[in-house]
Length: 239
Image (cartoon, rainbow, N blue to C red):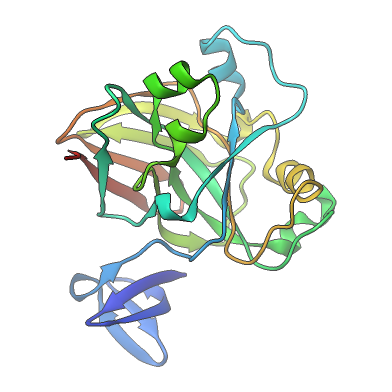
């Protein structure tokens, strides 16, 4: 599933080769703007959820998921610029697998989670690392406009063992597989839905593997997960 704009209208459709089918009409990929796949009320992110990432940081594995929120205003789609705010001197990329909720979800057991997930997509949990360290909590560092790139598509997939890679200017910086997740996506759905109601279009970003690093103005960052296409954005300096 893909969300796109043609002229002044936003559509949802399905990719077929180099075209998108929507409402019985085909649109060439080169003539449309691909948008973030879904409009969301909230983005629920998970910290420290890869075994190797915890080892990289010399930290104990968490006994339950560590969650935080990004606002809908932080969401951008593929091709949009990540704006580095003047208040930060270290903005990092974090490539992740994200699940998109398909129907209202409250107190859902892990065994039933698949029935509530529309599909999966690439996600980049952009973070002002210096502000995160300074504040001691994560809201400011994670919430700047443009700090939640996602897309390009929502795809039906098995999240248990997908290859995930993040590249900066074509060089691989993160390379892992989702089988290294500490808490699986169904376990995350169960945990989060006992705390807050998840609505259609809400996003769960499942955490990042080792290899997180800094973005500089002009860098092009790509998150690519097996079968989900590639999410590509450029970092630019904010004024």
